[in-house]
Amino acid sequence: MSDRHLVEEKIAWYVNGTLDEAGRREVERALADSPKIAALLEQARLNLALAGLASPEEVLSPIHPRILVDYVEKPETMDPSLRAFVEAEVDKGGPTRECVERLYEVEAALRSAEKGREAIEETPTFFARIWSALAASVLRPVPALAYLLVLAAMVPLLLQGVREPTVAPAGLLERIVVDSDRSVRADGTAETELLAIAGSFAAGDVLLLELRTDLAPEDLERTDLSYRSEILRGGETLWSGMHDRSHFEIRADGSVILPLPIYPASLDSGAEYLLRIVVLAPGDPLDGEALYQRRFAIRP
Amino acid sequence: MALNAEEIIEVYKGFEDGRTRETTVVRSWVEAVVHGGNWRFGDSEGVVQDVVLKLYQLVKAGKVQEPGGFQKMAYTVAKFRCVDIYQAERRRREREGAEIDVEQMPVSSSSADEALRQREQMETLAYIVQRLSKTCRELWDLVYRQKKPQSDIAEELGVTVNNLRVRVHRCLESARKIYAEHAMLSVSEVRDE
Image (cartoon, rainbow over all chains, first blue to last red; front, top):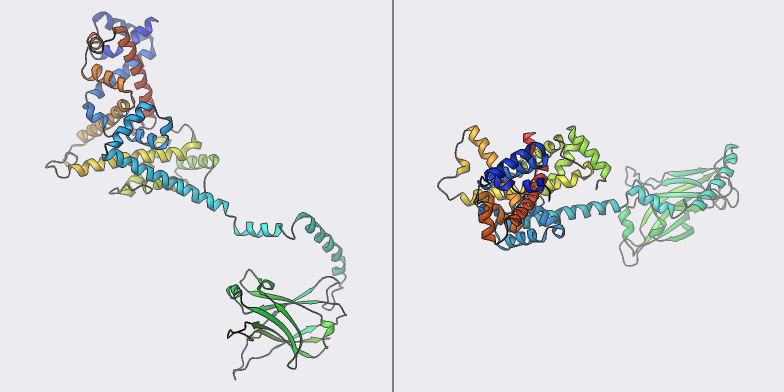
């Protein structure tokens, strides 16, 4: 063992004033040359000063906050004897146990908050859900490429004015948004404003009418209802089709749309027709009620 | 949203610069601890302010060695402070029936500073002694409190003087390490700087 080590071992008695004169001189000589001895001496003096402040009982209880936090946060890494010391204090009850209980509550609250944040992060945003839905359908790479190619082929036709007067090129649907008849006359009867669909149509041409109903999205939640769309002329039903709630679309603005393809060439030009959607709910007061109606005519 | 290390470093930098947004984030961390346990502080808002101020002092004193771990450090400092204040409030409640409440007595500013300094020294002492092993605690008492010479202690413990010196030296080294750890997050250390 070196001389320096021997001197270091005497420091405790140097500061408590019980070291003999030879030992004191030895420490003082080494002090000038060794920063480590100076540091140990400083610590020993601090120990001496601190030891005079309180009795051992006062020093040992309550457990210091940092030790309690370590005990709650990482008991497995704590020195076993220190852990046993803390546990003995906790078993006694009092402030130490109360603080440990509070710290466990804090840990639980922080963990809970963290889990909450993770759950929020895992929940996709509205746009992410939309994108996910689209990516699972038409926006998958192969179909999307096919649609792009078809559109690219159609652009020249569109630029050449093939759409005149209203008919889309073969294969493309002309979309017409059709509001329902909601205006009411002064005498209380519904005004049947006529929708004029202008154009000359060939056999096989299709018009897609988007019937904007007055339904609310929650109206579609009823699973016991079905719907029938009808085209009438002079009170006589010329055509009808059955729908369930899946046929309706809910738009971003909350409007409920029923897309309905019609073949205009099969209708007499100039004649007036009535489009309507009827609820079918046997045994329900709604049964047979028209949810939507609109007069229309094909004009050359 | 949970922050990653880079975001925590940004919060740390903003907090150091005193920016409002980052200070609000740090404050929310502290509030999570102060309001997360059933501490029932007399002045929770004051505790939050106290911890945020202490964190600011630690940041300014360059005591944050890993800015990426600043959030964890904020939690830890807040927990320390909560336990400390909880224990102090509990002691005060226990004294409520006493005729003289020392903490309520009027004191001059110099004696108030001295009382604060002594309290901090007591905390340091408690931390060091409690962290030491049982053997070291016993030796601490014999050497520093009872101030016994090495020969008496060796005889009392039934060991040689050389063996006793080695044991005491190891305990002194341990105390130094513990004190250094304590100083890293010590308010008084920050204040002294």
